[in-house]
Amino acid sequence: MADFFGAGNVIRRLFTDRCTVEVLQPTLRADGATEFTPQAVYTDLPCRISYDTVPHAKQNDKTAHIPGEMILFLPPNADVPPGSTVTVIRDGRQIALKATGAPKRYPTHLQIAAQPAETEA
Image (cartoon, rainbow, N blue to C red; front, side, top):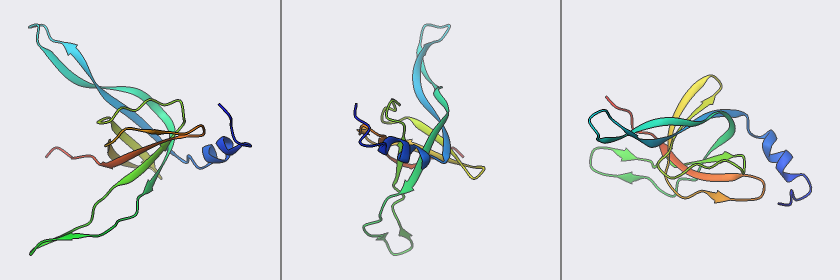
């Protein structure tokens, strides 16, 4: 693929975050049942998250909700299926995301829509 005059190098310099990508893989239990367990397919992968523009806030009589969609930028050779869990490390802080859509592939990078992952209480 063409690098468009070094654009890939410029974009990779923006990848100041690191991430781990986990996908659910089927595993066979001793009793013969299949269960899905998260398995890391990438660790310490360079990335960058960006906050998408918020078109409008939704409000009901008690609270206002602002959608929290983000865009995850990754190297072009990464393969991150929808539903993958991505843990981003930014400035020493963990940000848990869930890939929400099909990736957009460009010659210089991969772009994935993501939302904050639900936390289990």
